[in-house]
Image 1 (cartoon, rainbow, N blue to C red):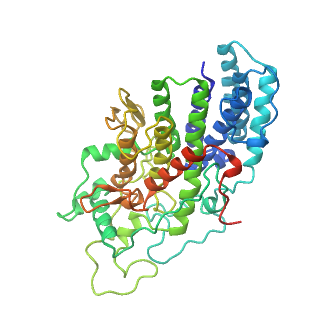
Image 2: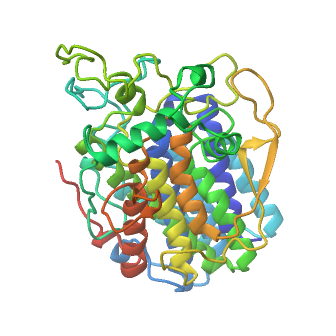
Length: 474
C-alpha cells in the first residue's frame, strides 16, 4: 500500500468534511488559501518523514530535520506524520484520523514504534515552522469605496472579506522569489471593455439572459457545464479547488506508476506550489484590489457607486440590474449562488490550477508551454458533476466523464476561463488575450502566468524551507 496516496485521500476527505460542517475550530484550514496551506503542511511532513529515513530526496526542513533512528520503518513514519499534522489542522476530525491510522496499520500489517516516533517528530517540526502564519480573518480590514475597488457582493452583503492580510504577511513555503504581476486593465482600457462585454454575456444569471443586448455573446450549455466542472467553491460535500487539483494529480500519478518515493516528492511539490500560489495570489489580490464583475457591470457608469458623480445618461455598456450565474452553492438547497469574498485579480482558480498542474508537467519533463500527453487514456469526473451532487434547487446534476486530449495544459487554460462562464471573473484575471481571443502568456497578466512562475520556480530550486521568500509586511 502506498502510504502517500492513502493519506492524501484522507487529507482530501478532511477538506471535503470541513467545508461541509464549517466547524469553527478548523477555520484556518478552510477557504482556498487555508486549504492549500493545510495540504502543504501534511504533504511536506509526509515527504520529510519518508526521505529522512530513505535519503530519496533532500528534505524540505533542511538542517531542521530530526535525526533519523536506525532501521525505522518509513511507512510508519509517513502515517504518523500525516496523522499528527491532520489532527492539528482539523481537530474536529481526530476520531476519523485515528480510525484511518488504525486501518492503515492493519492493511500494511505492521507498526514500527521507532518509525512512528520519528514521523511525529518531523510533523511537529513542520507545524512549528508554520505556527506563525497569519490568520484568515478580516478584523481591521477597511475596503476602499473608490472605483474600481473590490467591495462585498451586493447580492450577499454580509459575506465579509477572505484573508485580506494573509498573502502579504506570510512567508512562502518554497518559492525563492515573491513573483508579482503587472496591474490589470482598468475601466476605459480596450482589454477591460472587451472583458466586460464577454462576462456580461457569458456570465449572466439565467433568469436575466433575456435582458442582454443582442450584440453580446451568450453562454452556451457546454460553457455552463465547464463553469460547474471546475467550481469547487468551498461547497458542502465538494470542498475547494486544491482538493480537485489533487484528485487530478492522483489519477496522473497512478497512470504513471509511481512508487512511494516519487509520490512523496510529487505531492509535496504540488501542494507546496499551491500553498505558495495562495500566498502570492492573495498578496496580489489585495494589492491591486479590483472589483468583481457583479460590481463592475452594475456600477460601470461613473455616476454609480458610493463615489459616483452625476452624468447625463447611463453608459449602455453596464447594467445596474446585472447578476452573475455565480459560484455554485452546491448541495445547499435554497441558498443563492454567490460571488467569492475577495478581489478579482488575479484569479485564485487560475493561479492554483496552473501552479499545481504545471508542477506535474515539470515533474514529468513536460514543462514547456503547450499540449502534453499526461492525460492520455484518463477519464476525469468532478464532484460538482458526479451524478450525486445537487444544485441549489435540489436537482441532481448529471455525471460528466471527461477526457482532455491536450492534457494538463488544456486543463490549465480551461480552468482559468471557466470562471468567466460563472460571471465571477474577468478573462484577464486568468490571462491576457490577444486580438483574436487567444491566450497571450507573453504579458505578465493573470493567475495562469503567476501559477506558472510558481511551478517553474520550484522546478528550478526544489523544496527548501530556508530558501523561501519572506513576507512583504510585518
